[in-house]
Image 1: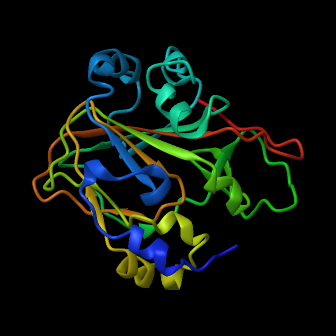
Image 2: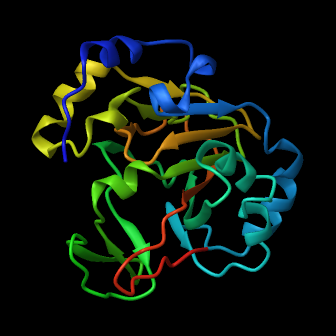
Length: 239
């Protein structure tokens, strides 16, 4: 359900320095260099994924789970943000290059990935992405999730950083025809990064990405985490 932001919330969402962002207040937070020591290990695990696709959805990739578990070096960041019960429920490797240099308009992530389609009240519509079942859950479930973005390459302003509207995660489900006005209200910020940085975002925050103006390798492992158990026989696909 959509909720109007109070004036205090809008003031607290005013632009601040990226390293001063707070996940609860702004819907984003960065841990500088948090994955630098693990970069080579993670890239070895991901090396077998298709290299000619902009985004590869990851399922049952050997060796990855230990890194993303709540006690693992990456999953521990999600646990710090959302509690010890979180677990990785979806992972995508984004690989922008000069030949896969896409742009993505402002939007909210509104679906989750599950093992099988089980029609359940409050969940829908359904879709198939990369052969996997996706469904839109109740918004409150999305609001309790957190998304981590593990950067393997430098992402300066010229290399298509993620753009976010700080604080917009508290607006609830934003109708498509109101997205532009909400972004204008909250403003936008580029999530610049160096290799090894980890950005955390509230999963439903409004975000976008331009095409790179000076394309370079831009590999990002994006992982959604949730502490919820799905109802009605639905099961998270997991990683």
